[in-house]
Image (cartoon, rainbow, N blue to C red):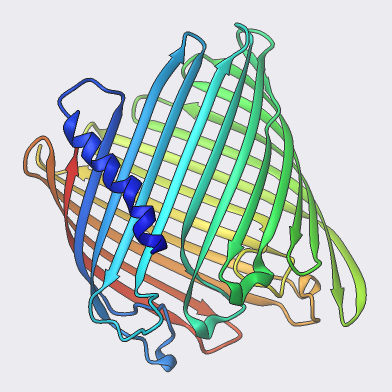
Length: 392
């Protein structure tokens, strides 16, 4: 019943979008209907006999943008994903999945130099957990509310002070992984070359409280620079460190650990022609533990590569590859366990054909896998689907 109620606003949005599609209204509606095959529906390891199934998936994307006044702007974006596994043997109803994702931002100019931004981001989905790898996938959601005032010190310098509050919730069986995160920061950004180069200094203080009487406090200091070398090349670099303190109970005793961890992020974009775009992003940082209830923090290294090319005016191809490595130290284990390592790899292919101005045909191929160094619950998943995409 709950899923049916949630589908009502989605269908209403589609109907309204269709009625006013020919007008100049400030919103767009995109609906993608997919039919595909998944060889590991519950994201389980091979030793747990993963189940395959064909599926139907409906993806509705709605975006709205409006100027409420001469000084106030509103942006709203939503993405609703509904999936039905056609021949799954699961009897608990979990073969029907509905995942909403919402993003709203309100920007108001208090004066020519001062403006504020309010935003709320809600994301939901399905993922695996190191705390219970044998159980396969589980549902989760995150909601982040942010307030960001910005002040223009001069035509080159800008000062902002973002504040945010995030809640992270999981299935009941993994409620120990739930967390509340509060963060506040200060950023000084300076334009070094108009339309080409800017640099910034960032200071962020965050506090994470887990649902299992564990906490993590972090002070993050970084410097970053963004530069457009020419119309083809653009790069961004950020570096610094974080000072982290973790408090938790280990074998009935209150434990406190602390340390300094490096932060590195880099991104590069190359557009050799108007029809081709290549990108690469590399990062390494110590962050909150997300996906396991045994560790207070983890060091995440990630490499993401992307390529997109328009073969013709009607045919577009896109490929993305992601490699992520999570390192967890023994001193951060709440029950005195050893250090562990976890690797994730994703590879996605998309081929899109433009039938006309509103209709597109998509073909998607996705491969995902995760490997644990301390268990035999490694899993992999392959998905293939063909979709009909309508842009209103």
